[in-house]
Length: 159
Length: 166
Image (cartoon, rainbow over all chains, first blue to last red; front, side):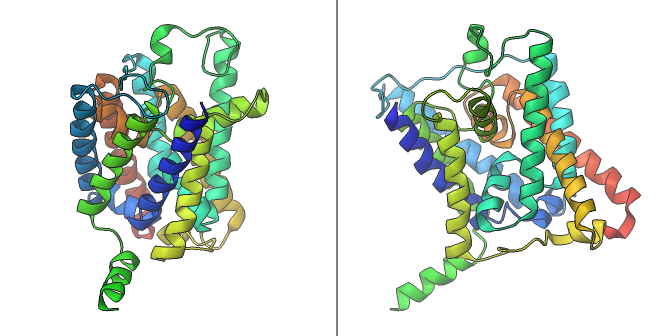
């Protein structure tokens, strides 16, 4: 388990560095993308997805095992639900206002772009609010003691 | 000596998309290969929230990932420059004027929408948009199209309401 934590830390550092270097931490870069004035961020997303799609299939096709645990590289995907759509609309609204999202906010914090303190606090509040609502409705989620249904444990669930 | 100067020039300019995009893709592949885990930033906030409520053992890998992103941001400011050590937030500042309380309120409110919405949707721009989509998740693809379309639409509406300020 230690290896997974170290891998998380190392790739987190790489991720934060690229976000800052590409200035995805700047309000105006994201705002110009959402205004459809600049294609850069779309091209970053598109080329990133293409490389990740090919690379991940390659890992699987070569039957590689992960370095931390030695298990075959694999993943499962989250199921589409009404929540996916409603949640994405709420997320998209907040994204349009703050012109940042959970990854870049953390990189902003590191860069000393202090407005991120407000945004990140808001994200924590939103996450807590959702957890509280799920608990009230007695729906198991990542933070509850009850075991999760299999599909909710899939790697792409709850990211 | 010449090479060093050129290298420094490359690093201090904003990374072009054809460098940043593929590198982000490689980070997804690298995390999958080393840890067998799918990348996503929101999970760090969720794990941190749950861990703060019920501290049990060492913090999970999503928390160390998020801590890494903060460290990576620090490195990027140090090596590549750009906006840093400032409360300024680009042209967002012209919307809220000089009022720091208003800025805090709007950003925290937007943050709450981001956290609540992404938690409900099961992912954010990195988890759904970058990782899930590339791993062939239909839910991620639809989530990404939904928050992209919503983001563009809300931006258009806001820029019309707020006029030239944005």
